[in-house]
Length: 335
Ligand code: MRU
Image (cartoon, rainbow, N blue to C red; front, side):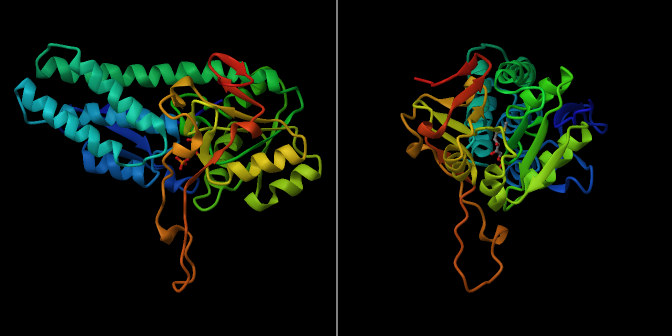
């Protein structure tokens, strides 16, 4: 199985300094384009424009992005370097508000350098190491989420998923798609229905491309078809990812997830959310406090005289969630 390399550290051919190399997901599946990034502006733009997207991948890109930017800071004193680093961290955090992984990854890197008494070159090295640790840990977490999720599948299971919570959204085999990869590895024959995921079509473009490239049968449906496909008995289980999960288990994910959970409950189909524990924002008692990204009207506007409302995420209440697939196993509830 050949999974795409979503992001990695490379060396710039011109000066030998590290750069952030990403697969530009806005071009998939038509073109495979890789982008070398090394400035805060380019990295923020790549996250904002969903060239790199999916909560864990955004976290990895932000951490490695912060490190490659810091390797180019002109400041030579520790104090000035740290001031510039915090300013860049805040700038990158502002790229997208909903996925907790973005701020979490930047804060983890900042904490690591603040705990060190080293000078600038040592701090630059620490940042690169911490970013790589975040990426490597995410890869390992995806494996464990995949193993845990096998408990809700069977050899001929049919799974409905929304958006893309696969390899393209993480540094490993994904969250919602991880159990499907593990099932295929065991010789099971999972089939996947993928909502197209309007307006940016992460399901139709990314999940369909990722799974078909890996030889897993995938069928694209319009978001509005999900309830009908459930009624036809084509779906055994729904598995989605999450961008932020509140302490009570309410889960924010791509817009359209909530209505899927309602339809699943009506049809008595289990509905699971898969994520690493770092996606839980324990500071938020419930999902009403999760910040929801509002995106540009251009993404859905066809008639210039009509107003447009374009929230990129919704929150599924915990009452609609059958269980949580995490690296700590399959949990019925978080609290
Ligand atoms: O806007 P996107 O494409 O970044 O939204 C992605 C999702 O909603 C994913 O389901 C979520 O980030 C989980 S990814 C493992």
